[in-house]
Structures are given as C-alpha cells and as structure tokens.
Image 1 (cartoon, rainbow, N blue to C red):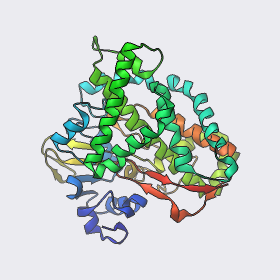
Image 2: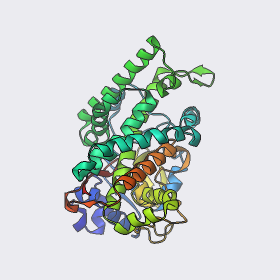
Image 3: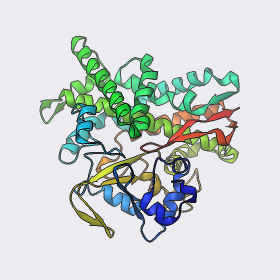
Length: 403
C-alpha cells in the first residue's frame, strides 16, 4: 500500500500492518486514523480486521471479554484445521482463555511473576548483560538488537524454565518463526509451533523420569488447579506462552529503547545525571515504543462506537496507538523520561493484562542500566540501515551502533 502516500480513505479501509512503511512508522498512521471521523478502521486484508486507535476504545474493548473474546489472539487468523494442526490442541493460557477459566489459569501462574519473586533474577540478569557486553565492547561497534537485546530474555526465560542455554539459537529461530515469518506463511508458523510443543513435551517426560527442583516446568507440573493436578495440556500451554510471549516482546522493547537512546545524547545525559528517574524512564520508553499488538474476536454481532461488527470479526488491539493518544498523554509523540502521569497500556488492559510485566520491566531496566554503565556514549552507525519487524510484535532486528 505504501502508507506514507496513502490518503485517509485508503487507510480507513485498506490498512496493512505488514506494509514496510507501516512497520517503520505506525504512529503517523495511527494519528491520521485516530483524528478522523472514523477512529476505528477496517481492512479485508489478511483475513480482515478492525483497528481501534483511541485509548478509551482499546481499553473499553479489553475490559469487555464477554463481547471481545480472547479465544484467538493472533493478528492473523487461521483456519480451524490449521490451528488444530499447529497447536495439537495446546492453548496458551491465560492469554487465550476467557472467564471463568481465565481466572483459574491466571491465578495459577501469578506467583511466578510476583514482584518479590522476579527480584531474585536481577543479579543474574545483570551478570548476563555484563557478559554479553564483554563479548563486543572491545570492537567499538555492536548490533544492539541481535548482539544484546535479543540475547537477554531468551537466556532469562531459559533459566526460569530450567532448559539449556545451548538452545538459545533454536528458541530465537522458533519464536521468530511463529511471530514473524509464520504470520504470513502458515506452513512456517505451524512447523515452528510444533517444534516448540515437541520440545516441551520432551521436557515434561524428562522431569517425570528425572525429577528436578526449582524450575518453572517442575512447578507447573506440581500445580493443583481447582483441587486437580495440572494437566499436561496446561503445562505445555504455559511453557509455550513463556517462550512465545516472554522473548520477542521483551527483546523488542530493549532494542527499541537502545535505538532511541542512540539518537538522543540529551536523554543519555539525563539518565547519567539523574539515576533516580530510571523507573519513570522505563515506563516512558514502554509507553512510547510498546511492542505488542494483540487480537480479540467478536463473540456475537454488536455495534461499537457506530461500527457494526459481526461475530467472528477480528479486532487488533493496537496498544501502541493507545499510548500515543493526545487525549490521555500530553505531547504523546515526545519521549519525556521523567513523565509523571503515565497510564500506558504497553502490557494491555483488563483481565488479560500481561502477567509477566514485572519480569519484563526488570529485564528492560537492568539491560538499559548495564549498557549505560558500560557504554555511556554511543550512536547509530547509519540510521537508514536500522531494520524493523512488525505485525504482532514491533521492534528493531538490526541496529548497529558505534561507541
């Protein structure tokens, strides 16, 4: 489509979240749609979808699971046959479960991501970040995306799950195969989903034969849900969720934040001179560069803000658009590291708000702090050479910097 040159009528009826221009700069598209007379666009592309752009609409939809269900959360739909073949009946609770099951599923995993629980990973994450920087700091250049950002969450998740670090490259390949390449190529998506499920099935069987302590897979297998042992399907789904939702999302947030800081000497100086703003800075970077768009499915024919929606329609929950709404955020396109009022929805809203947000925040903060401690001054080698991927998760995939 070429969104840079598209007129508003085209954007309202023919947007394409995979268009290169859109991926590089979705915010200008969101702005044009949000300020139009029809702030909820629709397209027939990629199986069809609606795209709300106002903070209030997106939050309202997220808080109405009885209308906008989570039985499918991918931005592109699959046929029932493909979906069954890809997952083998395995879901990814609690993201794709609705009440009342959702409350049970979420309650089961929340202790794993409680603030006090995730704090025990801070020193390990800090050591990991330092070891990664040790590997390239003498070069004077690095790919902030693939050499650093991409490596952090995959290793943290591996540690939590109790699976080998040596699987790192395979995990990255599988996740990209599902959330990136697989979105437009169902065969690739199915192949990588099955690799993930097969791997975790083997891990479950290994733990039955060789019991372990203190890893998430073991903890999940020992869970009781409503007085019954957690099923293998629940354990598989939760592990699947950890890998899919816990890696690409966080590395995209880290990569986008480093991309931003590489271009803003004033913000680098502000962080060095005012370390007390780190918490607000992390929240602001999450707001400005929220990586995730989820989907909802309309449960029954309805009308929302004048838009007639049919049962089965797909809704794109564009959290990045909500986070740039001027009705909620003053100067929304400006990154204000010490912003005081920041009701962002980078982690979603409503009952499906990201259960792993505490861990993601920790990884983002530590990754940025360690980088700034070790490499306080850096810049992009060539801003035009940075590449972004989008769709379900948006973030830089190549981001060469010099220091």
